[in-house]
Image: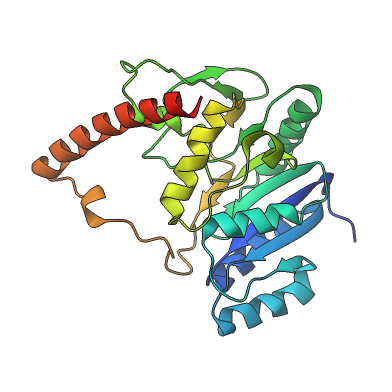
Length: 262
């Protein structure tokens, strides 16, 4: 039975690590929303045997291609090997702890249309509600241009995060323009390195400027494998003051890194 919403030139690439129930939930929601793709590729980062065995059981039900590695090699390697396996023109990149909303399919048609007719490198469908991208300019079909403000007096540190590992559509030849993900680093530095490369290489991106088209950990099915320092989450006055100073320093440091990359 064919899907109601079929995207023949798009592969959904899902990165997975020790969250097989979350992966099942994502695949189940895609099926419930009648989403069809050229292919689904699941790139596993050396999950524990119990999780990997469950993923193989899911493979029989949801008909995806599984790319594995014998040991955990980190986020960068997991995305690199997953993207290498994609053969369609476009990639919908989704981590296993997200799920599409009922509004995703109709808006995704417009995203593919924009990629077909214009020169966008990436179109994003989600951002953390406590970390919205600061500089947007309304464009069309409910999407907005993501603008990078290079001057230091634009002090919002989130301006560097035009790229994000959050769900997005991109061209499958992404590596040709932006290079591969750095390997051997923790998840956050890996992502931030790609943020800077995206800006340095002149990346052009849109973001859906309405309710998020994906939900994150909606069911809180499994614990997050990415653990962040508690000080980043505290709201006490001393910590918020130190955090503000840290973020100012981060804007300056990132601006210097960008200049050195050119």
